[in-house]
Structures are given as C-alpha cells and as structure tokens.
Image 1: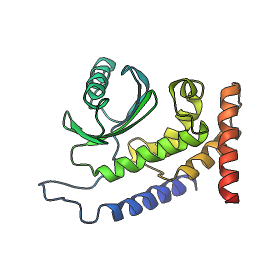
Image 2: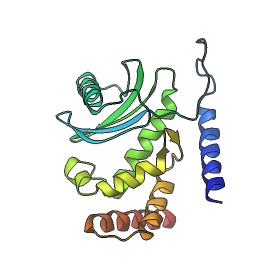
Image 3: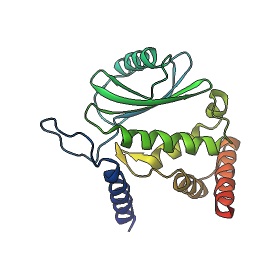
Length: 202
C-alpha cells in the first residue's frame, strides 16, 4: 500500500509538471523525459559555505569535487539577479534569502520550470516552518525539519511533491512517529501544524 501511494504521488506530480512542459523546446537530439529530474539540492551561506547538500547521482562523486562545484556555483550566482544559470553542463535554479542561497540542480536539458517548482516548494515549506524568518541562524536551529522536508519533496532525484502544504502535513505526521529528543524538532513540527491549521481556516 505504501509503495502504491508513493507511485501515485510520483505520477500525480509528473502529470502536473508535464503541463508546464507544453510548448517547451525539445528540438535537441536524444532528449527523453526522465523521472530522475534533480541532481542536487544545496543551501549555502553568504560566504559560499555549505549548510546543506544532497547529491542524487555521481556527477560529483567525492566531497572535494562537490565543495569545488559549490564554490564555483556560488561565485557565479551570488551577485546576479537572475534565477537560472547554466554551469558546468548543468541547469541551476536558485534564490536567496537574507544570508542563505538555495540551489536546485538538474541536467543541461532539464526543464527549468520543474526545477523551479522544487526550489519554490522547498523555500515556501521552510518559510512556513521558520515563521517566514528564512535565515542562517533559524535554519541551523531547525535542520531536522529541513531534512524531513527535502525527503518529502525529492527521493533519489525523483520529484515526489511540489505543494508546500502537503510537505508540511507529511513532516508533521512523520514527526509524530519518531521520538522527539530535541526541542528544535518539536518547534518545527508545532509550527508546521499551526500553518496547516491556519491554511484550513482561510
């Protein structure tokens, strides 16, 4: 039952995203859609140092290569107003908030709208968890909530969810199934539950 539910979630998300792809240029040779959309999710601080990184394939197999890529991506993006870049043969979508930089990376032929949907879902989920105070200190105090949210949005490079309200709901449910040994986890989950409650009352 759990496997079927996960498959249904994947199918629903990719059906929604397929609508975004209508009219997108696919004229290059050898393009084929893939469920494995996301290569990496990164969060860096305003010095370009890693706060969170999850790589879903072996494009950068070692920590040394990953850190070099992260430094490069930060140097090319942190002073620009753009939200999309092509770097080292990859499509990068990104946004900043105070002293944080969020990145979602896909292949060079990946549709940026799908990557942007992941980026926005992650950012909006964290924004609600952190009571719209998306900055380094708040994030470091609530890393458990970040890990749970990322796992609900992407699994193995496959997009599972792009609705932040659904992410918040699942984070709250998952939190009830494990012992909460740290106050920060409890705070994140309580905040998520409050956001769900208010969204239902609107």
